[in-house]
Image (tube, rainbow, N blue to C red; front, side, top):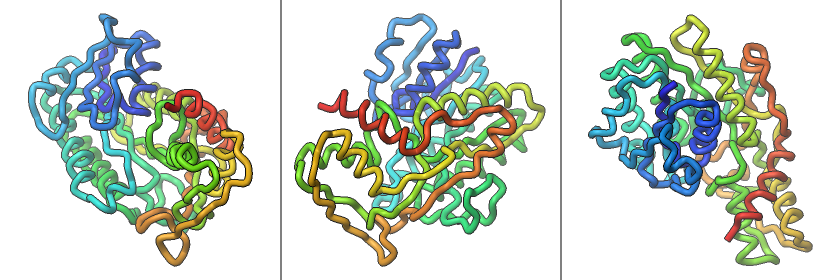
Length: 320
């Protein structure tokens, strides 16, 4: 297959590229390198079945030409910083919503038959049902990141109704692993590298969420892709997450242990009365993944704590 991966130089996108290319597909990556890094794709440069296009999806331009004769688009380009969406909403509006509209237009104009979109658990906001299934309503995001991702989902669903294309949305939990450059684990490592005696923790440490190891996330993505190629439906949504949770205090413990430190003082800095790390930070997240397990047979190989511990080891091995 000829496959476009937007954001393919980023954390999740580059791991997806690795797997898709290993399976023999011709991969075209489009990335503006605002958060992605070419070193994530270094093994593929020079490969005749791999092309890299440095382009900004916010600006419709010649990058749309590569969508001609494409079998599928994996749209993973986005600004991933949830906290930034609260302090600077325009970044997420432009990087995530405008770029998605332009990708959809390119798919429509070039007759791309299949689109897979990386969405997020934050579209649920603070659901009253946990684990939260895909059909939970109402969807009420509490941060701009989740709101913009939900807007992208609505655009994709509408394009699918109007035009001859099929699409699948993957609502991911917190994905962690090597090549990740943001999030609580890399934040803790950076802080402890600077001060081995004290660790600032945003929130009260009880924020509890699911953490999914990158290999599990990519395997789930590929299984859904293969399933959707065979199914007759035009649009569907899948949760992709772990089968348990971990809280921020436990993650801090795992980082401290992984770094071989002792007697580290934790300094908690809640930003809200109920102990969140910042306004718009979900206190709890836990996805119901029974749909993907039942339809594809996939299930994560790592628990949340196992994913955290493995990620700590891998990030430390490459930490400069």
